[in-house]
Amino acid sequence: QKLKDKLREISTRLQLNATDEAILEGLNPEAWVNQWYFDIFSSLGSFANACVVGMHVNQRAEEGEVSGALVLVQHIFLICFVMELSWRMYANGMRHCLTRSTWIWVDIVAILLGYVTLTSGTMNL
Image (cartoon, rainbow, N blue to C red; front, side, top):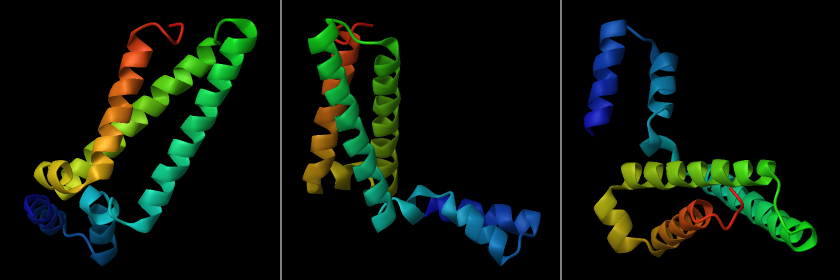
């Protein structure tokens, strides 16, 4: 609610029209995080990450090491997953996410495992 009030205050100061206000509202994670298209985009990101992990495992099995490009892509995916989790917690409230959503816990575990894997040197950093 505070963010909506702040956006209204900004739009009043800048004398924005309805279209500009809609754009500002669209920048608010509360407006789009709980929409179906955000879930689809997140799911596609998870699928793409699974494909990269498969390429990583295959390359390591065949060549004994992994290219720096795949490690970089894994880092990028990890950053994207942290951003997604942050947006969800911001939009829905941390208490709600941690107490009422089991998928948030799946995300937290996946992010922690990804972080441990990337920082432990098991991905050939």
